[in-house]
Amino acid sequence: MTSPIFLTGKRILVTGGARGLGHTFVKNMVGAGAKVALADILVKDGQAAARDIGASFFELDLGQPESIETCMGQFIDEFGGLDGLVNNGAIATAVGGLNMTEIEIDQWDKVMTVNVRGTWLMSRAAVPHLAETGNGKIVNLASDTALWGAPNLMHYVASKGAVISMTRSMARELGADGIAVNSIAPGLTAVKATDYVPKERKRRYVEGRPFKRTQMPEDLTGAIMFLMSDAADFITGQCLPINGGCLLYTSPSPRD
Image (cartoon, rainbow, N blue to C red; front, side):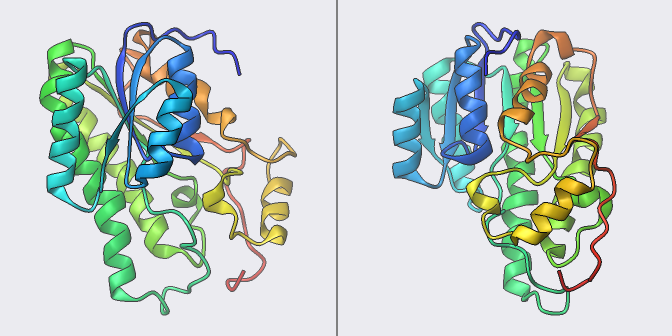
């Protein structure tokens, strides 16, 4: 994908960038002239991706506050500042298939710790550096499952609903520092993290939206890059669904 959006010289950190959506974001941002680092718990995959793309890599465990602080410190040491943060890292692989009564407490806590607390702590670590730029950007990855209440992955849905709410609160609190905070809510996208989703459910998802095709990672990059750019300086507190127009998906059975 060739982007008409230019991010020349922008210093951007993307969490969860070793593969999937984050990998696609990093690749396109580098292509648009940004100086990008990807941060991930998957060290080998992350290092390989960074080499292939021409980005930097930092190890990051979003479940560990010390790791978050270390990662941000390493980024600032290498790049000298921060213009944008993409909070893409999350637990999303194989989270579905459990009714709310079947989710174990430790499963719930792990998803919330990484997806919600990790997003908060990563953003908190970024704030003083973003404030120095005068027009810093944070983009949080939510999910359209939080917009329509997807069944059988309530811990994940709740975590992404929290991300949407946090985005709005963060935008109000950080506006005085010129920091824009927005989120995108992707639909079911063809990445490794969604391989576990049954084919029948994927088919019904496609049939339930105006654009009758599979959603790809590249369908999200334009919005992410726009929200990272100077063109989005006066946009904040928004959640942009990117799902081919599917605002409500109704499963015929709560067990699907």
